Image (tube, rainbow, N blue to C red):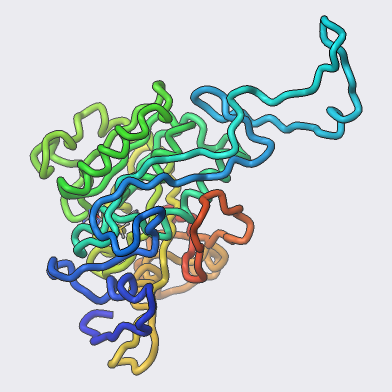
Length: 352
Ligand SMILES: C[S@@+](CC[C@H](N)C(=O)[O-])C[C@H]1O[C@@H](n2cnc3c(N)ncnc32)[C@H](O)[C@@H]1O
């Protein structure tokens, strides 16, 4: 709702993040803080390199540049006893590349101004990481995909996906955020398979799409070339975490999603968002205004049949399904998932 006067609801540790929903983008002096301060020294506020560890499931082998999905049948191993050439007992061993963890180095800020929130890691990015890893470990759906992360910030999710994808575009806007993201790609270059292309590119939801190759970007290093724009049309997977916090931005995001998803092959968006509650003086109640704006664009898949029968349909171009997070294991270590993060699978609605 526009024009509402809102007060932060609770002065908790998370209140700075909650306030993010209240402060307009034009308040660069105001600083906000995410809850993800992994490994940072206390009271540290600048840029820091943390190592985000993700546990690999027991039945997943880490071989060279890709995960191998191999289920170990321990019962069989227990029963079979064999001897090697020297007559010694041969014990079944896992590959020497086997690891328990996957570690990603991320340069991130502990606090930032509102326009630079992309320098921080937000809780929804870790929830989306858990989901992407779960898909990677349990299905081949993401193998060889062309994917785009929107509002990628530090680029964590996109880099995890790069383990199995063909091409990943990590997109955001503003030189500082793009440079930080590119630095993270560089920091993790050993982990990224050489056959996967990872591009850091400027994709500002508020400018026109397709971009005027190089002219609409704030830095030439992050400009798109023609073949990348063509490749983007072949993208089947879009990812975004914590990009719902200002109504203006939500409008701009869904406007560019409409254009991106209408072109090329069918695309699915996985969007993780944090529902932020504020006390509204107008409503005299606690409301999640950013969330309401998001829901005005996305109607429930389950209601789709009923919706199509309505005479006076509002313009609602996307159909979504909320994913039950209780079915997604926590692979990211040392974080609290919280109660207020939702994960959505969103597609462009078919013509009515
Ligand atoms: C809260 S941060 C989330 C960053 C990251 N996805 C995470 O969850 O850690 C919101 C992201 O949206 C990006 N963003 C904001 N306005 C944008 C715009 N007009 N075009 C593209 N990205 C934008 C910010 O730069 C930032 O990276």
